[in-house]
Length: 122
Image (cartoon, rainbow, N blue to C red):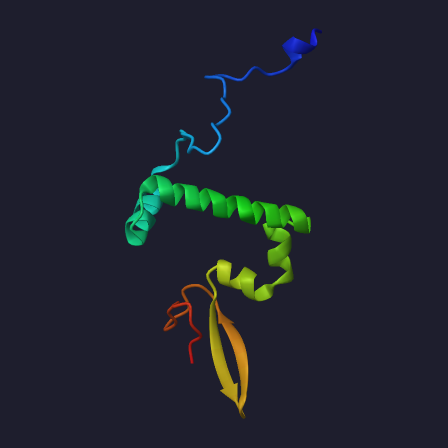
């Protein structure tokens, strides 16, 4: 079989290199929930939707570079940190004092009388 036929052809316009020192257009489609979130963040930060999206892409690329440099995935990092894994899964930390010593307990999501606020509940 011819090697050119084996390669999958890209559909759409050819990609162009951006001009040096200029901002380059980037067209993309996102889910409505993501667009609403970007719009909300841009408004709160007093910047344009485009600037907010660029900032988020830059942050995502920085995180990807760190993960690549570490040779780890997010799942591997979470597996090493119980606190991070529980927090991301919706559990709420509760600080409990016993004889001057603080203990951290975790309440499962929806536990009666416990509200998540990002701070320890005392």
